[in-house]
Amino acid sequence: MKKRFFAVISALALFIAIVPNAFADTYNNSAFVGKYLSAGATSSNYGELNILSCDSNTVTVDFKFVKNGNQQLIYTCYEGTMNDTTGTVPFTVNYASNGQFVANGTMKITLTDWCVNISCDSDKQHLFDGTMKPTFTLNPHGNTATTPTQPPSQSAEIPAPSLNSDISVVLNGESIPFSNGIKPVIINDSTYVPLRSIFDKMGINVYWDQFTMNSLLDAQTITCTKNNIIVQFMRTFNEYGSNVWTLSKWVDSDTSSNNYTRINITDLQPTIIGDTSYIPLRVVSEAFGAEVGWLHDERIVDIVCDTSNEYKYSAELIANIEDFNQSMATSYISDDFKYVKANPVPYFTAQSKFYKYTAEDQWNDVELHVFYAGFIDVLPIVYDDTTRKSNVEADETQAHAEPVSTETPNEDTEQDSNVTLIEETPSQEPTTESDDEK
Image (cartoon, rainbow, N blue to C red; front, side, top):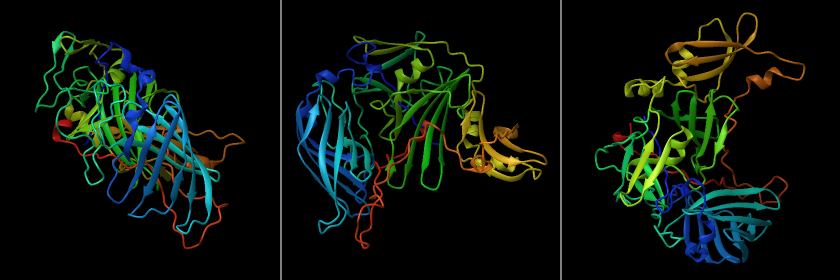
């Protein structure tokens, strides 16, 4: 199974890196001038943003989106305004190459340490949301620079050479070894670590899942559990690309519950270096109550935490739980239940993984929770006068999932019947990784 993770800690000032854009007031906006591509862009499917000029007051850009090698919506952008690190750029968009069916729109721009986020809306509809990554070395603070995104013809998100990797990690006074030369690195003043190397020693179970959420979207999750706490990274994607990762935390509940806390990781996204996945150390560590410090002179990440976990599992059992899929869960449901309908999302408790179903037994509508190894919870469904059975039978999706946006004109927009409209999303990041990450 594939697993993804990365970790974060300030290399310049202790505890600053946990606040996204903590250094926003020190940005040099002119450093953002250059070419950007959507995450995971390919040669035939990509979004491209060119920032032609940018200061604290004004910005000029060009933007295009290409799907299957075709640019079907033509953007014309005009000079925009900036307010520190956020900006607004007016544009017109043509729905046909002959210049007909023009709509007015506005692009919102947000500059961050490692990328530029944009959102485009016309006067007819929402057109595009994207995380645009630089094809050059972005260094908005004049200190440690980020590593450039590869051009569309290449798949690696970050090239294999290490980035400031002379870092050691000490957990409760003991140094943590790293195998195969895979070591922590500093990116954007924050420390990132390989997926399982540290979290296993902290007593944290880590599970990777990739699944089909519905007819439009697939999803990936990285779920970390320890005692009564669950922390989960999640992103949705389709054939054209992926949304950014989100991070949610549950305490004393499972991941099907809406009672969770969202942790902002817009600027601290899980990433791939070479073939290895990295996650933000401080974000996840502090979510589990660990104290994380940075010893600048020694270049040591110092972690102090309780490593006990009532439900800590072996690597073999974690792999088996990861492999538990919906088909296996369905096989445990007996023929006594009628019209069994599955929810494709895997859910987690602190102890295990389960899938949800709506069904009917001999007397009632019920909800089934089918756990790894075949244990089944049967929960009654109680309807009131305003609840329709069809709502219960409908496909469920996690409440915190982020939808991938599409770019198509509103039905109210006049258009030539020969014009084929495109679906536009941020492109999917690569998911390749080495056996070391398992």
